[in-house]
Image 1 (cartoon, helix red, strand yellow):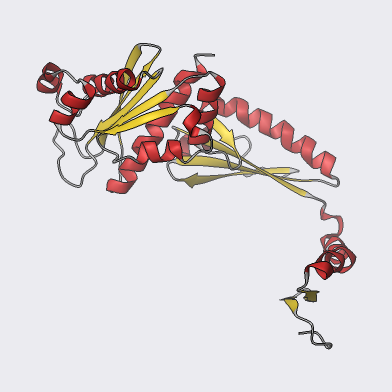
Image 2: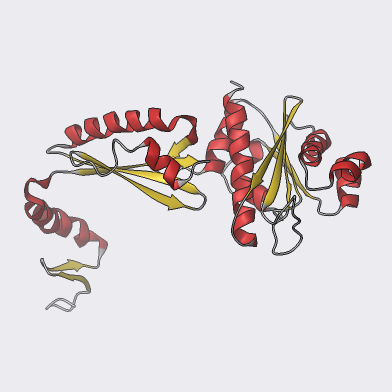
Amino acid sequence: MTTDGEAAWVLESSRGTFAVLARDAGVETMIAQHLVPFARAWAGGHGPVLLRTLRTVGLSPVEVEERLVDWLGREGEVTVSTIPADGEVWVRLRARASTHAEAAAALSKVEAALGAALGDDCYGRDGETLEQVVGRMLLERKLTLAVAESATGGLLGHRLTSVQDSSGYFERGVLAYSNHAKEAMLGVPESILRAHGPVSAPCAEAMARGVAELASATCGLAITGVTGPAGGSPTKPVGTVFVGLVLHGRAVGRRFVFAGDRAAIKWQSTQAALDLLRRSLGDKP
């Protein structure tokens, strides 16, 4: 409380103490007249700081560091560091210069160089997620998507539909865990299940094709695998996942082996599926 009994926020630090009026009318004036000038004086000649985050997928931290070895640990206007995050590796750029324009120019120059080094493994920047990038690409190309999941329990569909305007491209999702469900709902041939098993590239491709046909969608995306903790075998250990994709009638299947617990394997599986779709869409302008 102030001396006249008015409510106020009190901010204390080793640099000083500020009492900011709680009522809206006083906050803006108080900050503009007192807090901002103090902060500028305290910052002295340090200048403005600009941040940028480049998001990569499909690379390990070591692989990212190998590509960026010429920039990591370097002193100067722009510093570069890496951060492992949820099956991705983020590259953090921090630019500081005398003026905002100088910091922005330095940041842009280094960002362009890092982008060239990372190539297509860099999918976005700052707060942009993989599912947002995929959604934007689908909308731009006027494509539709249906998904079939046999290992991830709806996580793939959840991530896709968490994006605003996803109804503009997402048609439907099917959970088909048993062989019977794969046959009855997705039309996976019994011969494929018998010859290759439900955890296989042919099965993933058949699931993707089946869900695309079921929904009359341009793209079909499917996941099948062993998420553990039991159910693995010498040839298909826990963490073995197959992703199937059908795009414009062409089917592809990819095999992955992930580490971690059930939740981690599920998450990495959806990462792999979204990234496969992203890279394939990049080849289809």
